[in-house]
Image (cartoon, rainbow over all chains, first blue to last red):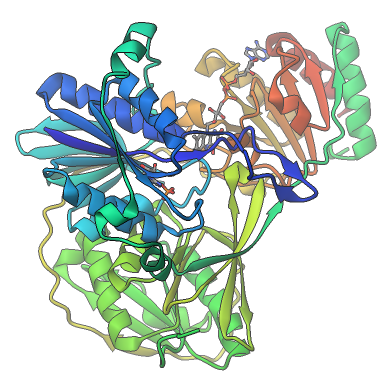
Length: 260
Length: 324
Ligand SMILES: Cc1cc2nc3c(=O)[nH]c(=O)nc-3n(C[C@H](O)[C@H](O)[C@H](O)COP(=O)(O)OP(=O)(O)OC[C@H]3O[C@@H](n4cnc5c(N)ncnc54)[C@H](O)[C@@H]3O)c2cc1C
Ligand SMILES: Nc1ncnc2c1ncn2[C@@H]1O[C@H](COP(=O)(O)O)[C@@H](O)[C@H]1O
């Protein structure tokens, strides 16, 4: 089984600072997008049952190597990083073009796994676009995967229903957070992973150029405005429960939100 | 800006009928600003909705595709149909309801048409001079609003349910255009569909919401929150792990779930992950109960009690009963 997992080295949004109404992007912390670790974990459980090879693929800054090392330590076999020349200013169409050309440079695939969405951009577009670009079927919002011969049987979580589907490989799956709990690699695994290969490609290695990607990318960002939280933050602690509760109720009565 | 010539008009699609009405109403408003028309697409193996129902919200044309391949509205077949219609009609904008089905469909169409797509727009305007669509969405885990435009045509955007209001307009009729298409048969086979049990009550309409998180150890413990909700005439919700992992509820509150704006939002045993908080940014007052004084939820709250929910909630119920 040849499995490719697409993983983004995303902004660590929990750590992101807002200053004078703007997000501070310079030097902002990054990490592997949460659900992409679920995708790697799903790939590992398939490999454990059916054998095969897991390649993780990222289009991102050179610092993404740190994230890829973590995925290798989890159990991926090989990592590929396409260096993004644009500092994240490209849209999903351009990202998908780079990912698709990289996948075509590999020796085929049975399964491509993506996350349902990234923590930073949160577009949910890359999976379906990539499936379309590579002309393979997609199964989105998957919360369990079984392999049956040449078919994938997957359960999807849609708004109103759970839907079980059967689709022949090759295909692309987007997973939800609920599909598994990603393992945290131990020291042994981390040491072992340092010997696993990370291939770095420039976009030119894929026959692309910065101009070409900018042409493909048609979504322009006019502005980014940060929300500032203006909460009162009155926290009651170290008081007997009854007293704490009465104090809270008196605040809420003043706010007139109790409907009395 | 090199916009490919004669793309004109706004087109909408959603398999969810209320969302479709909302998209039509909003598109009507935008179309009036630039004197163009609004069309809608209906897909299915058997279409039950009467196209003139759509006229009542301001649609001018309805394109209908009835085809056995559209059974189950599989993304591939829908994307194929909509792309063909777009290539014929050449609208300047396509708006799709951001249900999960819509969210997997829109990027496929965008890829087929080699154009841009904005996911989950929360605001939609037109720059009349440039005839550009200005779209806002929420990114970075709810911390940032970004504003976008797309320089290719058609522009594609998905729009979540209940962002725009549906408005009936009297005395309009729509032209109905039935389209026959060859849709390739799909390898995508639906084996089973299980309905989720839906509570029926709409959490986004409640003015007081009490939300439980993983601090509640078992399903029965939510009875405590039900009791509090009873006293306050509010409704009970939960975080994503409670619904999606444990399956105690069918829907959750947050970035990937319901977005709500109650007057009073009470969190119980919730840590305050950014993805959760992103769903309640518009709440008037937020109150949190958590035993961990360091829990991030406290900096997102107006009032908080540091304490064990199993002691605080019963006391809160008791004291509230006295004043109600
Ligand atoms: C892309 C993405 C989208 C997501 N979308 C959503 C979303 O829409 N909605 C959502 O909710 N989550 C979402 N999540 C998940 C989110 O990141 C958090 O994992 C989740 O919100 C945590 O839920 P929780 O607060 O219930 O649980 P936990 O984080 O486990 O917090 C439990 C809290 O309960 C407290 N506690 C424990 N026992 C007690 C007690 N006896 N008394 C008082 N307090 C107690 C603990 O101190 C702790 O703070 C998303 C994640 C990702 C990556
Ligand atoms: N730059 C990237 N490199 C690799 N994979 C990506 C990248 N961006 C998105 N993906 C994949 O696409 C999924 C959905 O991303 P998004 O469309 O940004 O919400 C992610 O969970 C990843 O699996």
